[in-house]
Length: 353
Image 1 (cartoon, rainbow, N blue to C red):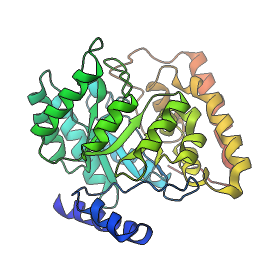
Image 2 (cartoon, rainbow, N blue to C red):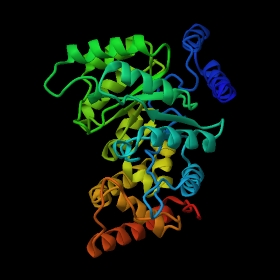
Image 3 (tube, helix red, strand yellow):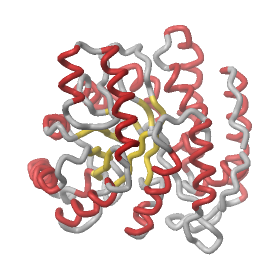
């Protein structure tokens, strides 16, 4: 996968050299990371990204449906996605075998091609050396960065000192692999404090962060810490979208992007545009209102919505096996009509499947 990484590295180099002083550019590029570029301090800056937290399609027999996965990747890309987070919570990563996690990631990397970045979770295993071994396997699939789950590195009753000690040991076991962090709610939700976040940034290894803090003041504090580093900050909370993007977040990775990725892409492209603020505020209000509705019985809710939009995806989930109720389907049907109204309001056309 060297050619793929060389391509995105060259693209990042060109963008950086055009926007940053030479000394800063040289320092960032010499760090050896392939894709992820530096934050800029101007809150109304271009280059924001929607990165989907990908769902996993299954065949009727419960096995991964790679043909539909290819169609889903193409759908995300047509809707404006600028990267992919494979093998995440939305992918039902805890319900996949180690081999399935690897095959799923390999498929996404291959289908995404050289122009699209891919990250995937790698911190599986009871012991640090096991986490490191699997991280290397995930990196060997060709991803641009390997994601670590923050709650994989300390028990819920262990303090931040233990968390940092375990990360330090993990760094030594994983060579110079570019890494990311994800405050996944499972096995428990471990929010990174400013102290821990700063520690991880100073390691020079972190290129990606998916944040689930929700409290915007705390989110903003971490965004400030990440500015002018090579870490790309993605907020998972759609209620924060406008605010996080304007504060300097690189992009968004909310679950609603699995239903209407065009809208999240539009928000990433326009949240920092002074000429679009009226529509931005309207879309922000709408996305916040509908989030609880689409989150019920997720990820089946997302699969139902995508099926309604024309993707040949089965309403099968390993983590949520009960079928949608008639009422839940009616609610999602209503959200679909609302989505079409958003598209008309902001002047975009839904992706045709």
